Length: 92
Image (tube, rainbow, N blue to C red; front, side, top):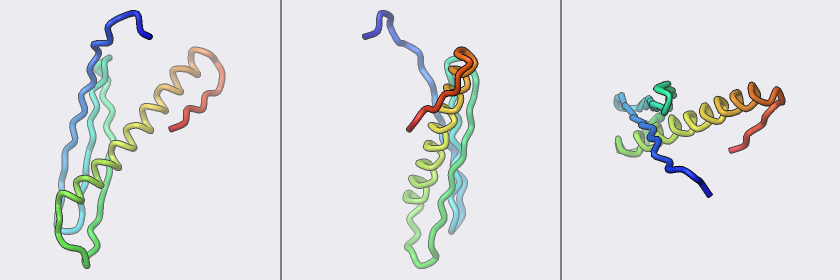
């Protein structure tokens, strides 16, 4: 399918900050062209629920990564539109 080796690497790091009811995640993606995208996600614990920090981290990270995917699709759409001068609608 590809006629060259695809050895590009993108690195994504997720950082968390949290308290007893809120977890905040920041996803930082360093792309091939050295550009960096940063997105965020949050999770809130219902006071009736048990305190399980890992669950909050998973939810906040998932939301940050979904936002990152959406941002990457937007960036790709913009690049295609600039090249083709036609509207582009990428779906996820």
